[in-house]
Image (cartoon, rainbow, N blue to C red; front, side, top):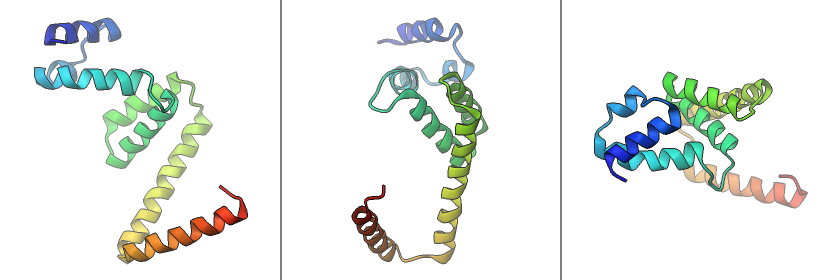
Amino acid sequence: MNYEETVKEIEDTFGIIPGFMKDAPQDILIQMWPLFKKYQMGESIIPQKYREMMMLAAAAATKCPYCQTYHKEVCKMLGATDEELNELAAIIGMTSFWSNVLHVQNYDYNKFVQELKQMGEHVSKKGNP
């Protein structure tokens, strides 16, 4: 697909060509649009609602207000409830908390991996997820 076809498809999809896409280098937009279409709007192995929730989590981790706004609104469009989004926020916070603890402790990574394996074996034997 060439640049003109790409821009036409974007405009057909959104009704406009967002400025951030218009300002992107032409060769980049041609490459990124098919990925955007597939992984943000199309079908893949992971259901779209869950992909958007993962992208919202990534946006929160990178502290990007543009991505956070976009992905939160798309999550809602795809049926994510306030309860799901609130739980997602708590999960993101919990992940950040333990990441910070491990980093401040400078916890030995090999020991962490070994302990994780032991925990996984124990949980599997008990039949818990």
